[in-house]
Image 1 (spheres, rainbow, N blue to C red):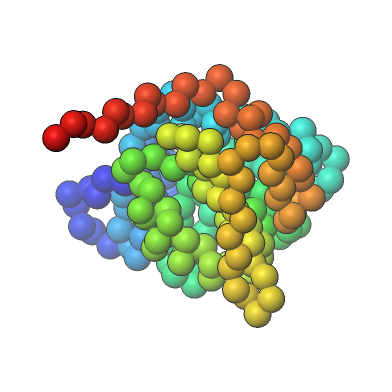
Image 2: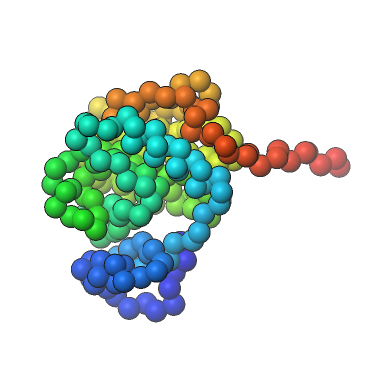
Length: 195
């Protein structure tokens, strides 16, 4: 995210109005807006692959899957984010065409500029959503899918997948890790330097 130089406070309604008129996407954080950076080929490919898998799997289920242009609203924290992929099965979300408040699955594709935020403060904000059952982080540097599932007493349990099959319990999905990375070129591993 890139902060705008203008530090004018915006209400959520003002933000939503501005966002419908903007050519650039912005996330909303405590009354301030932050411009979203562009994505790499690998990022877009991974997001597209997992979106296509979810779309096919959820067809006819009553659940909806969204990719990168739909906002998730975290009302308790006064935030709006653009998850890379989001699934909602809540009928109340049909009433809000600009954002969704009840996602059960959120997937973020990691990038160098957002990885720490996606793992830290953003995940903490997402955890305040009572509807959220799984939060998934997908690496673009190597084959690695990290799935945080809400367990007993609200504790988040990490399940890591690097090869073979992976599962998303929130939507009853199982698929191949390899399919998530179809057409993705991983960066070459750096050789250790000799001293």
